[in-house]
Length: 222
Image (cartoon, rainbow, N blue to C red; front, side, top):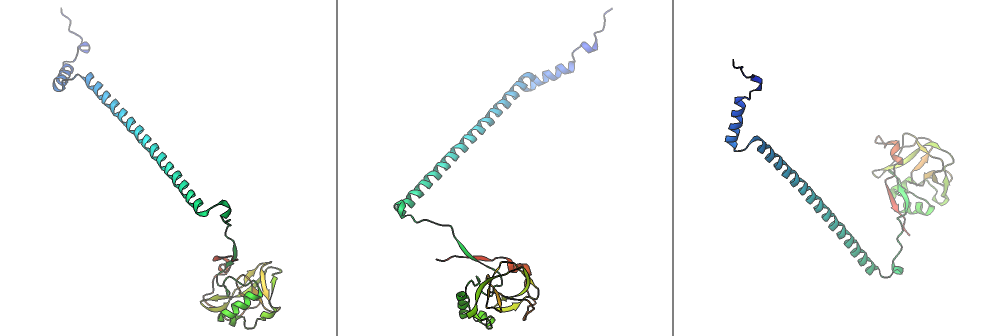
């Protein structure tokens, strides 16, 4: 009695048909297809690496050329400056800019007054300042210092008008002042000082903090 072959050990006739169909359709065996795909991927990887190396080399070359150009340009500029300047002894010494004063907002006298002569000059050249200092004895003016920190009222200039603060501001100890023995003026801005409220005031009075914010510096002149 012939024994039927084990189904699990028999090759699938469908599998043979599929392989034969692949061979007939493509002309290549499955193994050959995989080998060709792997080779193609390997070639693509090598090409990508080659392009990356070329790009890196090009970047290095450009950086070298750019750096060389900068060095040449700097050297040329230096030679031109040296030729124009002459010998080292003829080159003038350049010193950093020095600032003499700071201008504060709402100053009665822009850039302030730091001597009797400056106050006289300001009065003679500005009618608004002259009117504000009409009762100030310029002939007795002298420099003084605030002996202690105080809360005071100050005058200020806004749109060519002179007003007084309705609120007190802090006058710090040690601030430079100008006085005639009766009236006191802030040297940094020419704003007069009063221990009691004065008139006129303005409904557009600036914030107290803005009086202490410097606006610009004036170059010292020799």
